[in-house]
Amino acid sequence: MHKQFPAARMLAATFAAALMQPAVAAETAELAPVDVANLYIKTIINQDEASVAKLNAYLRPTRLAGQQSAEYASYSGLKEADAKFPTQTGKLIADLFPAAMRAAVTPAAEQLAANVIAAKNGAACQATKAAPVTVENGIQTAAVSFECQVVKVPVTWATAAQQLAKSGCKLEQCKAGLEKIAATYTSSPKQAWRAVFAVSREKNSEAWRNDFARETFDEIWEYL
Image 1: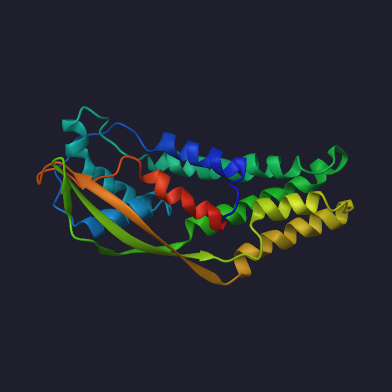
Image 2: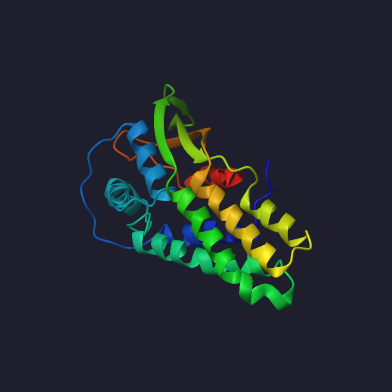
């Protein structure tokens, strides 16, 4: 298992802050657990605007009934976190190198970070099937299997950048090395990431939900 780079944890925390915003209540139709899981996936992993809106509309009545904020996710907040990632992570990568060359390697470091977040957002994911609903202590739970096609890089960006910084490379070599790492995120083949995402509800009239969805989907960083 790959060790998660601090920037990935920072981005995940920023995304978490974007997963709660106020809005107007709306009616919602019944959805199957697989459909709900797909909305969570496309909201948190892909930041698809239409899916964010549909998930918010679906969850809103249940969230309001539970005295929670009306909105689960903020599309603008998610995109803002995305926009900050290349600069923030690029700085962390550049800081791995000697002080004298940090400014010069920063553009390549930021491009690497931009390619990483694009690869994450571009992962092709699909919920495949839901196990039979179980009931425990009055809570209905459906475990939904899903699969994502994620880029299969030779070495994850955090490890590769750290190895390059420790290699004693000269400025041009370091820049070229970062560019080479960045290129792997656009040219490498795909690999399958399979996992299970659980959704629960207490009553048939409530929405299927998972208030800690990000904990499951953060595992994608292990592949990046």
